[in-house]
Length: 87
Image 1 (cartoon, rainbow, N blue to C red):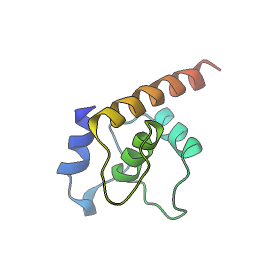
Image 2 (cartoon, one colour):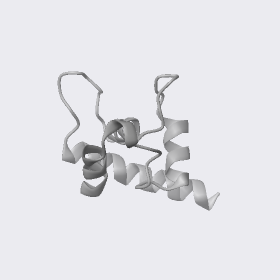
Image 3 (tube, helix red, strand yellow):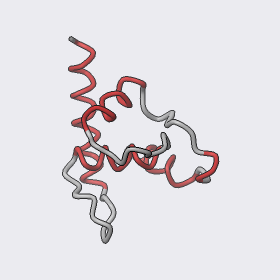
Image 4 (cartoon, rainbow, N blue to C red):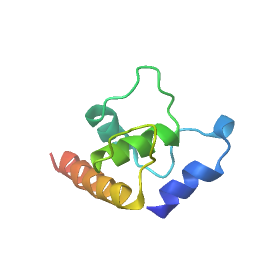
């Protein structure tokens, strides 16, 4: 999980591409489950917020998601992606 957070912080914004820390199945699940702005770019940052929202993050501007929320969200994402692969 810390690798996801580090990937989002160390790569300059202009060179960020589609997140390599997530599988294609996880990206597809996140795109279907969590609503986002229509023109959001496919960088790591929106996906971190989507994972946090799965963990209970309210996406307020005043406070960033914490480690507990990220861990919960990543756990839910893993379970949902696994369930999607089983079907």
